Length: 329
Ligand code: NAD
Image 1 (cartoon, helix red, strand yellow):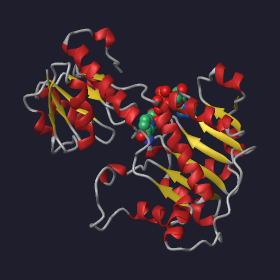
Image 2: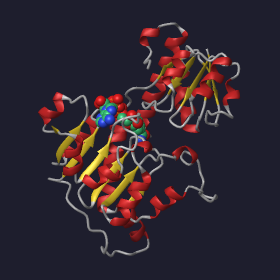
Image 3: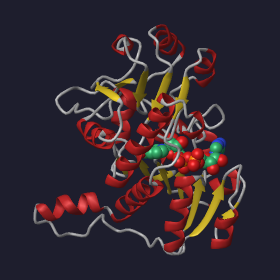
Image 4: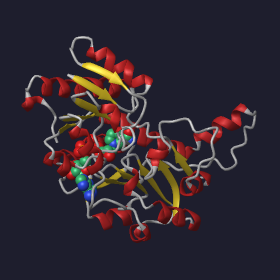
């Protein structure tokens, strides 16, 4: 099976090549993301392997189908970038990596919380300049604080467990509550109640029609003054302009982002020598109480291994017609 691997960074090549050693998949790596302009590169392949910011809308899927692509293998968990209805109509099957080291993303969310709270990024720079002043570095104890968790799937559950370990009161919202989390001490509440009670609120639900801009001016209004908001899920969960307004007023006291609604134009590339044209992103990055990382929550050795293994397993199952074993959507 000939597979065109899009958005292939050097680290993707390392892990995919390593796990392909015992398989007979013909992988060809393209640095380019998949979109309307680059879809031509899929000519002559049987499947495409894609990542979070590749575009699989009506137009691209139709073009892929005309070029003979019958399978899309996502090497990520989220699938908001794929028009599944169109893929089905075109008889293109879609697989993903439903669970890979959820701890990778959960631990990154905790890293954002700890860094924002104890200002490690500022302390690191100060000490390097022999400035040992503690002025402006005051934090708060996590112990006893109320943490709201939206979405308690694989990543949310791992995150809840860590925060329970810190001695936090954990309030969750998920349409499918998990009994084991209740037994461990977490409590499920309504979304409004979570917004009202959470001193820290962390997002771990998928992006879909009902969750788009879940964090907006109305939901922010319900939150506590000075709330800490963490998003390691998908950028579209947050209305960035509403968040900027709340940061300016001090309603949001801390913001930690690993994802951003318009990240596809920015993330995973080095733009250090260019002028960023996205004024919303630049405004967000200018606040002293905002910490942004470029979608690196998944980026651990363990997660990369699991992503490569599952993605190639999905492709091989498709190749060998072992449909039942692929993680289809
Ligand atoms: P999952 O499917 O295991 O869990 C998602 C949970 O969200 C489910 O329990 C579901 O019931 C719940 N949910 C669905 N809609 C909801 C809503 N409107 N409100 C509250 N809960 C809702 O997914 P996961 O593996 O835990 O991943 C969660 C998200 O994390 C993914 O969708 C993806 O967007 C994101 N993610 C980010 C990174 C990263 O590198 N930053 C990596 C992997 C995944």
